[in-house]
Image (cartoon, rainbow, N blue to C red; front, side, top):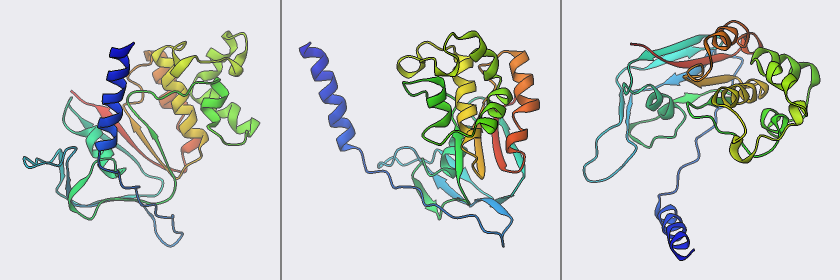
Length: 223
């Protein structure tokens, strides 16, 4: 018990010593501009110390227009996720003015994040339920099939951080959460990697339609 307490205290101490993370700036979408994402030249690094070395360097400016779908391909470790993190303001910048994302945004990380609660809680994430749109989202993300098998349907409890769910089910839930947020821009980090081939094909074909009017950036693996 004493050892566990010490480990917890050490972790808390490390957290306290961390530099405060700056809250990413928000830029409202404008009817007069067609730009959804403005990726600017700059360098970013996860750690800032005397041996400073950039994690990722963006050498050319790129603008992604509203409604465009962009896929970023590359081998393992090539910096796809770091590029996304730099755009979202998660990696500290060491040069440049930073990228801009106009309007609301939704992010689906490579490792699924699930909150303790029900399936419905995780998808709605605090938003009011729009029954028709909600059901469309569940179908688009192939969650309706899982829900039919659970005795309590979408009111089934997922367990602590989704411990009762498979990796594929977690991924489908966070995809549904992102789509239900009805955001202007979506960032999807390798979203089909943990689902089976049949489900992956369904997601590629159908889950795009609820966000077809939005811009999105898909990070995928190319080998």
